[in-house]
Amino acid sequence: MPDHPETALAAATSLLARRDVLVYGSTALGAVGAALAAWPLIDSMNPAADTLAMATTEVDLAGIAVGQAITVTWQGKPVFIRHRTGEEIAKAEAVDVSTLRDPQTDAERVQRPEWLVAVGICTHLGCIPLGQKPGDPRGDYDGWFCPCHGSHYDTAGRARKGPAPLNLAVPPYAFLDDARVRIG
Image 1 (cartoon, rainbow, N blue to C red):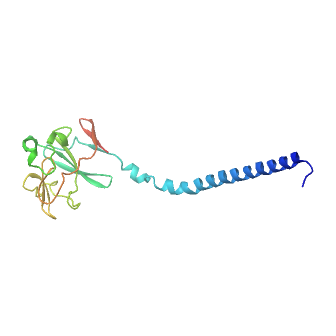
Image 2: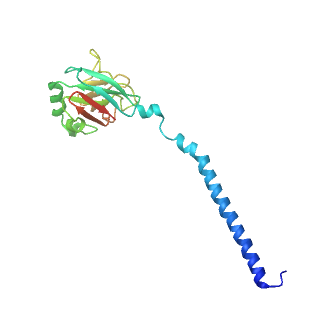
Image 3: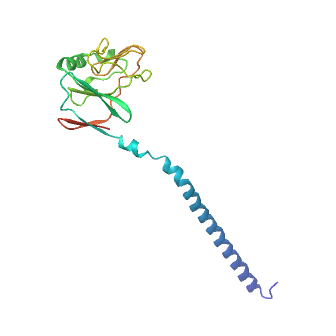
């Protein structure tokens, strides 16, 4: 034991200071190591490059005649784009919304009355409804018909008959000009 209490106090303080440096330094180094180890896991949760590339799809509408429909792919899903006739628009607008199981007006589903953009997946069990190609059955409402379980959709993509509980989904889209639309 040292002869002077001040010397003993100084030695103890010096030892505690060194110990604190070691504890804090080890803790900081451990935290940095844990962050570096966790980074690959966190980075793997980001969307892949091919998924990001499919985030949006641009479609040229110039070649789609009135009454014609096309199917494009957006995020791996079929999207129906129909250039509706005046008769199809009138049918869609004349529907009493209170009779629908998923009530939406035609105006809520389209940005421009002549163009309908809808995800082409039946809301019952995920089948692809018919009605895009000439000669396909279009169901009782002249829209789309899902032959798997008999769901019928009208010219606005609204579920009208059969087990489908919801309307065909409308993806986010914007018209870039009169002849192009961006989906996504």
